[in-house]
Amino acid sequence: MVITTLNLNEVTPETIAEHTNVLVRGVDLTKEKYAEFLQSLGQNPKRDFWFSDKEHSEIMYVTNKELDNGRQGLFARGELEWHCNGPCALDPEDVVSLYCREETNANTSFTNGVAAWEALPSDVKERIDKTFVIISDGHRSFHKLEMDHLVRTHIKPRMLSDKSVYKVEHDAVTTEERQELLSMQSRTRDPNGFISETMKTRKEIFDNGGKWNCVYKRLVHIHLLTGKRGLWFPFYNVVGYDNIPESEWKELHDYLVDHYLKYTYSHKWKSGDLIFFDNTQGLHKRDMIPDGEERELWRGAFWYVYKDRV
Image 1 (tube, rainbow, N blue to C red):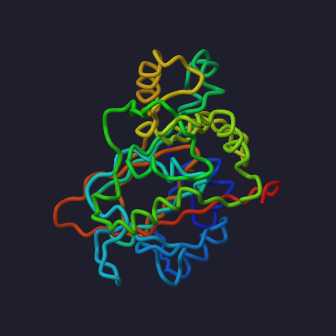
Image 2: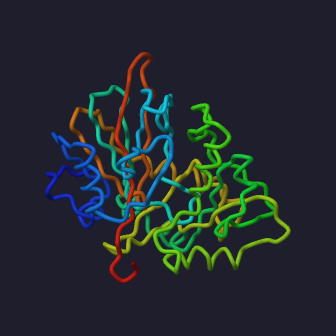
Image 3: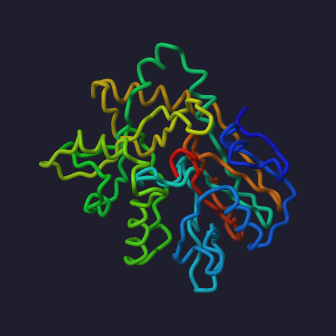
């Protein structure tokens, strides 16, 4: 099952983690109530960006409508290919939510990495279970960043998929706004150790002579709430696999993409729909926004609170 329908009072961190993608229909929430609900589910970072609500920073506007500041929201135009929240970030928020206030013809699709992992042949599971995917942004300014979790490599990153993920500069953001977004790459819920595995890996692999930034993260994610394995696989950002021979990267990558995309669900939005999706276990994408259509979704993003960690 790729998505599960629940009532709003059934939505908890545990049910989101258990089902990966959760749909609630017929919701009527004010910004205040939506922000309060997001706060009740997990840890929400403070935000101050042109696309975030000034009174309730838990809410971000994904819209091509003009905001009070005269700008459009985040991801304002076109199609968004398969992606996840902050693939190159140190510790991106675990869960993303989208709340539809008005019906739209631009569908959103979701994958389920748990279902994809469970259906893999045992020999493939064994081959990739301990693998780190090598992730890159592909943007020149990303490779100039100095952040503690980025791994320097001498191998120029080349995407293994032939399509490009959405780039925020398509929305004609200013240089300052682009820098704001890049600065978000270092966000984390717990600067005192939650991401120690990422930092340990970085220390072991870092190449002082390298000039390209990459991020190493586990392909098979073990969920800290459920204990379930699932594929964390932002395949449009993948440039390699750390313990697989380079000559085998492309064949493995194509196989995993083909298998992974069998576990997808496309959602046609209705007013009042609210979807939560676990960012550690799946991807999402958006269809092209039809010409002349105004589209607005209220986006949330939060970290689970693991009792033994935070």
